[in-house]
Amino acid sequence: MSLKKVSEITNQDLIDYIIIDDADEKDRNTLDGYLEIAKNFIKSYTGIDDLDKHPDFVIVVLVLCQDMWDTRTLYPDKDNLNKVVQTILGMYSENLLPKEAENE
Image (cartoon, rainbow, N blue to C red; front, side, top):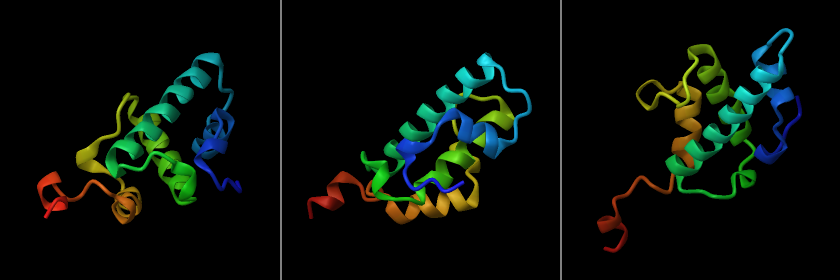
């Protein structure tokens, strides 16, 4: 897989990454939902809207989608984030400082 941008990720990429045999239409729809949830999670966590600026967000999306698939949940577990995901998101997070501190 040679994805360089989050916008390039398809549900087939997710099927290949997660290794889902015989994915049906329901699985593909579920993965489409997970993909959007993962993108929105990254945007919310980091404060960055253009995810394509950072190629390492691709692995974050893949891992978040796999975690949601494995646990059959419709949200990433913020309290138990994968260490790789947490590290990458932390490197780019613009939301770490409270609003009061930004104005000082």
